[in-house]
Image 1 (cartoon, helix red, strand yellow):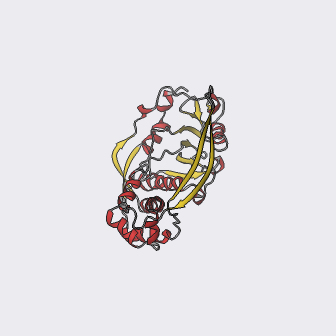
Image 2 (image 1 turned 90 degrees about the horizontal axis):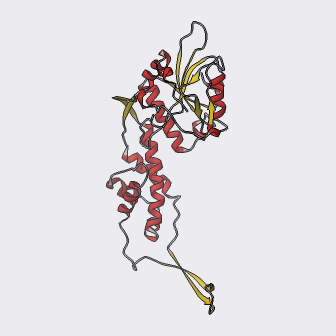
Image 3 (image 1 turned 120 degrees about the horizontal axis):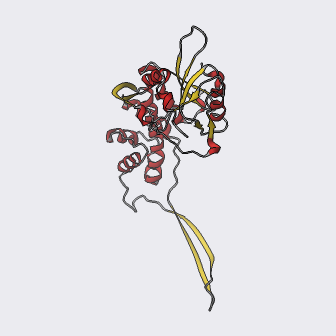
Length: 302
């Protein structure tokens, strides 16, 4: 797909880019007592099993002159192992810290907070029965509650840097089956900044891109490239579309950022999708003053 460099020079694109190009940094506040309370409320749902050792007895049959081996299992048995008094208990706090660090992106909370959570465990014996399995389950709860807090109280501000138009590649490669062609002068509507649009889904993005190409109100649009990202506590967020359109004679020209999903009800999205969209709203609407929302089709664009 070829970049239409003349599109980047159009006043419509220049104004659009000036509105959305700014990078931001964020600050968050974690309420430790609330985090502990939220995690402890879910800890009763953690069910762990005592470690078990499975013993299997088998034989191997091999015949002279053949390279074939046959394994024959004679018996097996499963034995539950009681760790109490038999093995040293590992440092559960360190296990939790290591598991938190291993997430993408890494998440961290203070040791005092981890200890406060463990001390409030409704079933302390489950920690001792299987420390590693318990820690893995607990980290899942901590990550969920911490992410909710980080996103819920996030504040953005411009950091003084921005994305440059020169970051658009002159050529991008794509499978033809994943492209909606953007042919100049075919429709009364606007065209993409490349001569085609790479779509990630057949049911949502393809019909939306085709509708943008046919809509006479659309003067110019861009499927935002992967490098255009909003920083969030749970990883970078790459919004879908930036659009310039007119709504009628004498009306103000609109500059829009739109995210296309199978549903516009945030509660129906996967948790990380929902959180990134909430961060996108704080970035674009609250900080940049930019029109932004989640839609499912062209009829919801305004």
